[in-house]
Image (cartoon, rainbow, N blue to C red; front, side):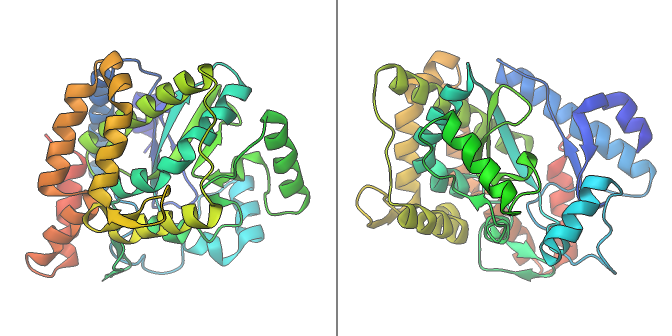
Amino acid sequence: MRETVGQLGDRTGAELTRYQVELRTGPHICLREADEQIRDARRTLADSADRLGLRIASTGTPVQAPTGPVLFTPGARYAQSVAHYRALDDEQVVCACHIHVGMPDPRAAVQVSNHLRPWLPVLTALTANSPFWTGRDTGYASWRTTSWGRWPVAGPPPYLESAAHLDELVQTLIRAEALIDRAGLYWDIRPSHHLPTLEVRVADAALTPDDSILLAAVVRALAATALTAIQAGEPAPRPVPELLRAACWRAARDGLSGRGIDLSTGRLVAQRTLAERLLRYVAPALERHGDLGLVRSHWRRLRTVGTGADRQRAAYQRRSSTNDLIDYIIAVTCPP
């Protein structure tokens, strides 16, 4: 899609397989401007795809299986990944939504990561959009999360003592050949290896632009709340790693419609209760950013129509047709 590259420039790029395309926004302070850019980029990409007889669909996993062998994007690094990780790459036709938040320095990025770790299950539940995998309903709200967890360095990051601790750990993982390089650090949160940001990578590709903006608003508010806590000398919570991992699994399985694990007690509670706890926690930061009304509106929408996973299942159940489901995803990926 060369004309798309010309129009969007560095806001679009290739991914591991030829079935995928990455869209990026520029840095934004105003989320309404970010929303406009997301919608414009999706429309531009959809128009370009249409001229080639193709369509774009924003979902965490493919609804139907690719026909024939997986088509990998040419390039030395992708070839190295396929040779190193083997069948893992064959099944990584998955798409995520990553949010970058500017950080003052590497030390702050590590500290904010520690403060955000306990909220990863709730973010997974809020953004679940991958219930189907190659022609069947997996029973999970976010199958991408579960599939992605098979990588050697993925899932919730460890508690990091310092920026030096992170660097030492990454170098050890590279020497152990669990990583090819720092770009292969696939934790749900990671300090970016090439930008002065903290990258939150926990979410499925968002079904609609509205879903993207809700995630961006909540992640920015979480980071701002964490920075305030750090400045006040408040330590980051340190949930039991095994319980955090279990909570992430539970959130990926049931999304917002089921129960989640309260990391402070180990008990099961309604996942919506945990989501509302998160929204109350970040409400002061949302208000400072002018996003409180926007987030409350989107939260009401989610409570009414469900997550992307819920909406995908509803579209499928109308006629038990994956073709109908794909048509639905295409339609809402790029709304008029």
